[in-house]
Length: 188
Image (cartoon, rainbow, N blue to C red; front, top):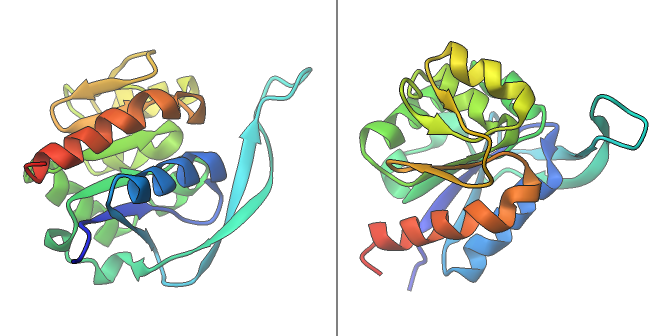
């Protein structure tokens, strides 16, 4: 029996913990996570943390991850949901027309969506956040609000079929409700 597939959106400099926690939770929940990126190849993830004495995020290399599918090859109907990981990747991949098309499709079709940290830059760029309440890292508040979204400083924000968290520190708060939303969409 095939498992329902869920897209996990990444690119180079995707945050490791933002990505791997939901990836493995999807498997645990009976879903097949499918890593999607600009091209089907290996991507370098990073670790982000504000270290003591620093006022900005320090970054260093994390694990790498293989993309299973390129954005241009995605047929949205084949996947029950989509997850936008954080890190620096969203800033660079948010101009990809295929990614924007896919993002709009999930929004317009009421499919379960989730975003963490800088992941908000993708739905914001896709033009789907107007009037939408979302959590994101504080430094992306402007990206959300300039596109008409409403910034909420909470570990889990659910507005319609979008679930969001601020950073990987919130994974334990927002990933579970999103997986429940995925299950509900399948009638589980």
